[in-house]
Image (cartoon, rainbow, N blue to C red; front, side):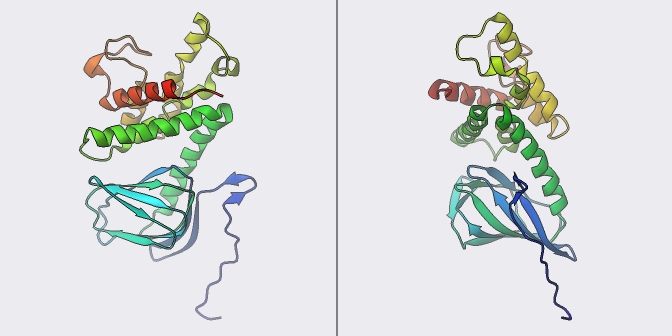
Length: 259
């Protein structure tokens, strides 16, 4: 049929047992139509662009989300939609359930997003394959950090804080199982291995995130009096965001129990 273009490729979020987050359904003259899967309790950002007349359109096919900007929250449900144009500041998207979204953009964003989500999935898999508890610990710490940043009225949504908190413990994937999963007190040598995980985290995040994110995650076990690790930083030497993660991290450790 002249003028009719049919795409018969099956769109499925499960490919050989691995979850894929983003599918490009169509592209034409800088218009991209994508289908996106977002896990429950995920945090994403919609950010301003310098491109004139750039528009992003989101239609919720499944699930429920909350948009957060300028101390205002709006909750949207299945069949709701919204679009952005001339966005002035970052908008945080929080998935309250598993989401499936039809996403349109008047610019080439698919390649960037596909690479970005690929890196995120790699890091999440690194955490999960080692220790399921650590994955959900990181999710809770991220939520606590978001709540703290809102409570102290940080100037804007700090994506460096959110990304660093999400992956602050990813380096634990290199800690031996018999130490990380030990049921009992650690000895001196085992603690020395645990103390290496911020350095492992730094290595995994370097090249995937900004230097600011890497430095924040690396410093999340530093303490104001200099008694922390790995560098013994104190006071203002510790990034402010790392101090927030330290509080959230300690709170979660004290209020949850390992299985």
